Length: 537
View 1 (cartoon, rainbow, N blue to C red):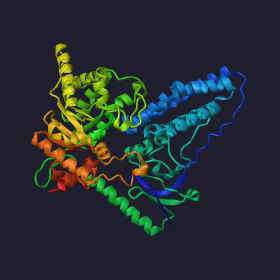
View 2: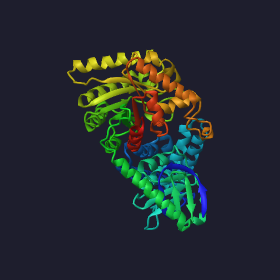
View 3: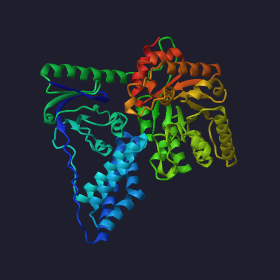
View 4: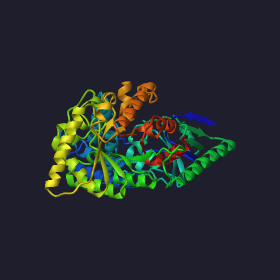
């Protein structure tokens, strides 16, 4: 048996034959063309067909993995329409009199090299997107139709890497799991794998001769076993059955209260990014939505979403939750979430730059549009509003003034709205240190442990070179957490956690003993956390 170590992306056990994904290489040959305008027209037709394919992928992803995860295909469509990209291809065809495939390939190389050289994690990640969408366009221009899986049986798919579009095209009925040689745990592909519940491992250097061989993929440990003996397969099938039984037992927790053995009630909410994700929250019996990421409404569009567009989404979420609390975070872009039509200047350190509430307080008209939509939707359910990236009392007071202006405008127009709780995210050391002052200004705190950890440790979470240094259990972080909880309670407000640590089952008991009131986690983690809460004294 050959054992190959990788990195876990999503847990689960897959047992079956390996199929190495054989991608047809886009071997592009430079050809001279006589009629350059006809070639430009051929390129334009190919671009439109590629956009249609991406739309179909978006629709498929929307049904299977939700709006937030499908958004990457909207981004790819926008890339095809980017004027710099289009003009580069068309100019190359006209000036060099070359075929469209060659012009696309050269433009792709130039753009991806440019992105890779940038000192910004988000822009470097765009390099892979440019290559992905360009390769798709080249395949369309070449008349090539790709079949992802060659065999008719269920397989463990092995590949050098998988682009987001390839991941969505996978037939889940025939994919037991997938393993790649390359990739990042924070990539779109990894996120899609987790959402689709496919056991997945990245960074595993599997041998080229494993095609067709029986293997076991352990998504829990990030290990691929090739040619295991019957005894080992029997052990892993037992582990597989135990995991299935555990999931079935968790289903029995639906409808149960989130109460500790000592009688302390914990609000157990879900983090979501779309209306489709709300369905997953309901399916997993979340008591409410602790974080609705409204920025995905902006990320999926090529224009500022209108008040009506936003109102419709917020109203749908509020009505779907049928009176359960829905905490909607106002626009949180910047850092690793960039939007072209916002026309923001490049920054040397975007994680600490022009982002989140700073944009909203600078572009008040944009902010008011979102607040009007939120307040209008509050008449249809139990909506609360949460503001990200707060560092001062002055910011909160400015927000309260603008909110009051919006409420007065709605009242004058005779438009109803509900009694909306106002809260802030505590995700900066500054906010943590003055949490006693901030608690007097708001109705609740929600601790964003992802950014709080990053800023406290001065470590970029997206930088793989720093993985060994990043310690989410650092005592400084827990000192901040205790300070925030205590200061919130002294002021009579409730305190929750909506960051990744909230779903860490090894910390659930500790958080409860620290006095936390609410935990907001991925929908799939609601029942495991409920089980842990009910086992805690």
